[in-house]
Image (tube, rainbow over all chains, first blue to last red; front, side, top):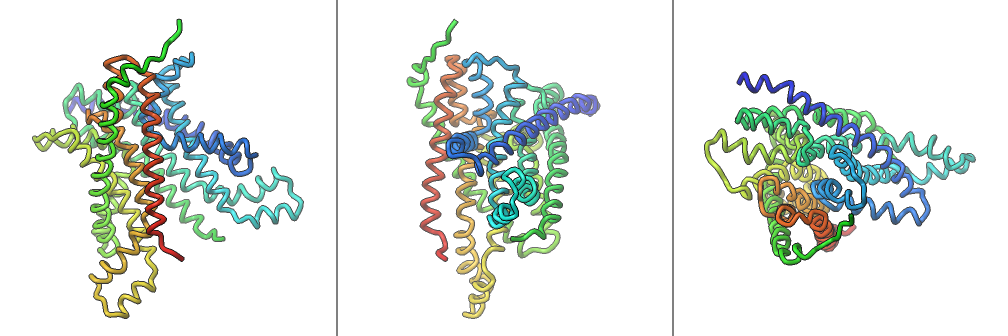
Length: 215
Length: 221
């Protein structure tokens, strides 16, 4: 038992790594996903198909396979990344595909009449996007986006499989030393649960807060 | 220094991948069947039950949905037997984990489906003199299943992708087959070049087939 307590700082390091990976992934996927999501709705035809194929490709393969593919496959193209960079890239590419769909759904849920009204009062495209569509779309975007963030934290556990000492691998290493699998797995589950539950209950509060919006 | 792609080893051991793929589909299929059973009974318990039942069901759903599947797999495979003093096959343990995992998602799907059954249909059932049990079997469940069919097929494809995680406890499914080839031949890149399309094509073929089914059973408006 003492041993398990001694391992707490080590688990804390792992937790920080999990949070770091998740934060980076959430950041990159938010930017790339928003740009590509707007592009898929408003962009020209030649942009639609590449983004569509990108999104369907990355949502169609298991995350684990994608991580291994990037981790082992990128050096073939003379791209040598550290294991940290390659998994962040893999997770971000995967998450971006999901964010694209969330952004697309949010924008398309705004009635066309809103955009037309914007046109009528003489707003340019950028202005329509910024003042008419975005403020409404953000409310539709937030709850599914937070779910995507929860998914990103859960998905970050897979980085342990390419040797990054995140919470998952830290737990396993401590188990390797102490041979107390059950208490440590439960502790780890509670740690993940703590992070994700606070996120998902935030999402539920937001949903309730924006529930008044109706077409 | 140039790397030459060489697929020979993969073609000679392609059976590892085909049987792996079959096992992946089987694992996902068994898990969704058990998951549907868990989800359906808990969703019914939730909609009909008191505060305590609701609390327990909600706790189960929230716990499973907020913990990484990888951790659940380890917990069930290494953690539980260490306490219970027994052991099981990796595949059994994985199916157990994936079913419990799928069950949590199914509860939400069925709960939404049950709420989506139009009030008028249930009232009509009452009007022709069906009792609560008959209304459930003949009215609510059939309607609900037709409503949730799209969610079920998405869940199946999603579970199929999740079976790749079974490789971490040495269940010989597709990803494990890939890693077996990888460790035996060091043809790392080639193996992923072959396996990625396998997942992709199978996943979308499944989705397409299931969408045909959905269309056949869709409620005509």
